[in-house]
Length: 207
Image (cartoon, rainbow, N blue to C red; front, side, top):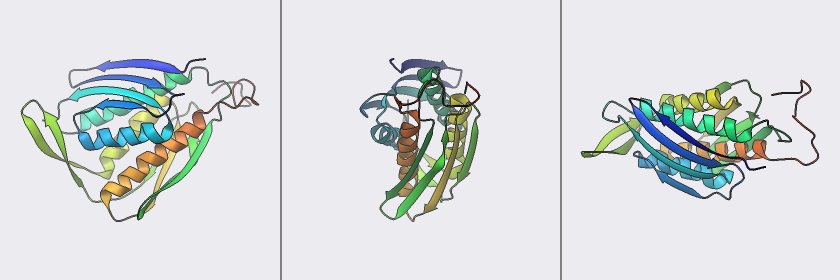
């Protein structure tokens, strides 16, 4: 059973093309106009062992919101479709990931349940980042609320319950990096196939 999918999401604000292989080896090819977030998605792919190809464009001259939100929607849709009937999956995943002085914990609540829910406990100052537009580079600021938008969009489309707690840290960059690594590891564990299981991992008979 190949758990691979291609997603194309085009709106008047964004153009996103994505390929996902859940059972990959962590290879990624990311062409993203916000290099910092492209790096975070590379880390997510690497540590989650997902193969991910992503090409994205968006109206960054307006702000980050449209592209970040639509990227979450496209990635969530990709996981929902690639997981298919969710037969024999572990369903639950958990990860605690340090990044030097930062510690992010995705608690035992990556639950591929079919019921989207997201809890986000993370605070940090705005991070100055750069984005590429047709006219060159522009300065933008990434904050915790924008990350919330990304993850909320993801869980909504993926049908996943997820809780992210940022325990501590100093560097905003390290805090965000720890979150994305933990996100990848926890989701990877939840997606794993367990040959001992039969059918869908629910007493209801469906997820």
